Length: 249
Image (cartoon, rainbow, N blue to C red; front, side, top):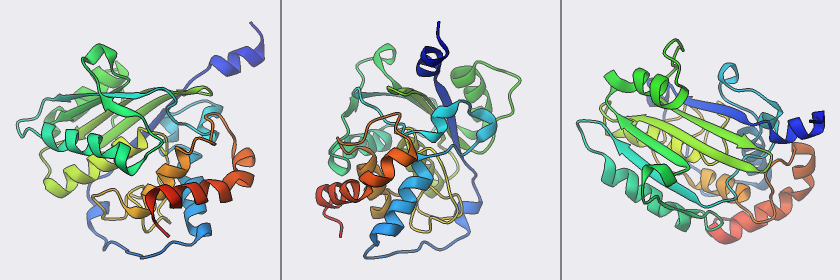
């Protein structure tokens, strides 16, 4: 098997976590308008890279990661406080917010390519170890986490574990950030003051700024596996598309 072929079939496990505490200490920053450079920089910072490099590997971290097959979601609620209805409502809102994304609820667990576990905090570590990594020895960071398995041809699977019993705001923050990052923009950056992809911000909803980033990612012109060098010349068209489908100027 050639080295080139091995590089094509190799996949990346990308991980993102939410560190509860930091995100609740800051005041949200709001803006009625984001200039093109501000949005482009947010797109580059979240789409290229991986938040937890110790649990990620492969050159795919520096390439576009997105679903090309329909996203089929299975929600496994194991928490005492049942958040199933809230997660379903958020999932069903995504095709409206991101028109280029195909997403629906899976008929059963086996058919799903995006698994969401809603757990109590006491079960968080064990769920990540057993259900996501199959590794009882691993140290599990944060309070909520998502892992994305991706090849150059697109994302194969995402697994998110979300804690239910740390309060409404923390749950919503975890749900929004980890599910959205499971769609491809897996990196966090503390400079993104308008974004949920920043553990020092306090957003617990899908912000307009992040809607622009996700719609740039799910533009039909953007292919998985592309590098930053390939994407930069396309950026004006990606921004134009994102502004058009979101109505955000």
